[in-house]
Picture 1 (spheres, rainbow, N blue to C red):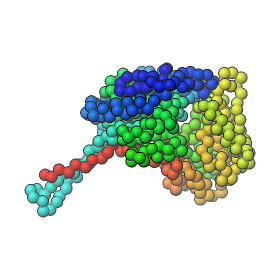
Picture 2: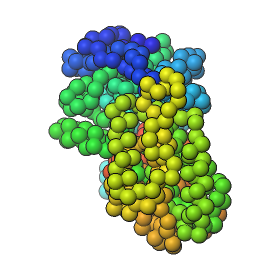
Picture 3: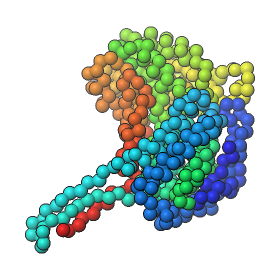
Length: 477
């Protein structure tokens, strides 16, 4: 797969190329064109022209048909998408084949269904004293925002790109997308599928490149962009918000997390250990929803932490960090944890495989204990395969510890007490709370965080609300 921009219905490799390296073994696998400002400008102009032209005149039924053709196209090239996702991210093939690529196709179908069946409201209005009937009809229509910039991250490249592109197109917007510079391949494949689906030129555009001072910043600061949807680090979100402020551009942000799990003494211990193993180490911790803070009620603390550390140490099928830079960042937190006084129960270093993987960017799944709540390792997002486990005594203490964070994306509660589950979940300062499970998603439900974890919600009608503007029409009868 050769990454390329897709602008106004044409593929191009304009710009100076930079190397794309496999995180699994460090070798160069492609060259990616860095979109110059001129290419970003051209993409935004093409999107605007599409809104003023054929794409802007499409009906809801026509857009739904396009979205379903895109879903069919992803499925028809399923193995290509899986191979590209694995090559870019280094994640296990099973993860890409069972989650990332199927969800990408499902996103397009889900939003085709949602937008087609979405009702709007109408209100008969009586106004005494009017001439004539004294009646009016107030009804609501939704119009697209216009040109939408979509910035997606490297951890779930296709899934999170389509999570925004699908509702943006469904609502009638034209899109200019910029994937992470670390993971350009599945985005290019998606552009090929969209091209084959026959969307009018300019309805979807794709530019590759870096963020600050490059394609990403050119796009988010562009005066021709009407809205920005971004998933990524909180610091990057702050920078994008500063750019957006100049033009009062609406933003939807899904940012970082330092997610907590609460394990109560009445929990099914085996289920809680297995669930926490999954929530902490899936995709080597490189998912914004992963658990980095685990709080366990004192009576089961020793048994829980012992079992979790044993199973973490036994993990073998895990992928690398996305880059050498990110690997070094994660390893710096491993060192910091020890400096802060942590006890390392599992991992804490770099694995040795004795094969090509030793040239990649792997780090060990790591379980630590013994740090105070004020430790940097407990408060700052590592975005790697590490969790800190600490004890608590009572329910109120567990809630205080869980909420003592600048982040508020997700949390997990492990308990067999149904009353406790319903009592605790709403008191956790997070956008998503799972009880006795993790990352069990319904595409219709709201997704997003509070505090430094984001602004707004995605999913179902929440995404359609962001990507469209309600307009009230009042007709005097």
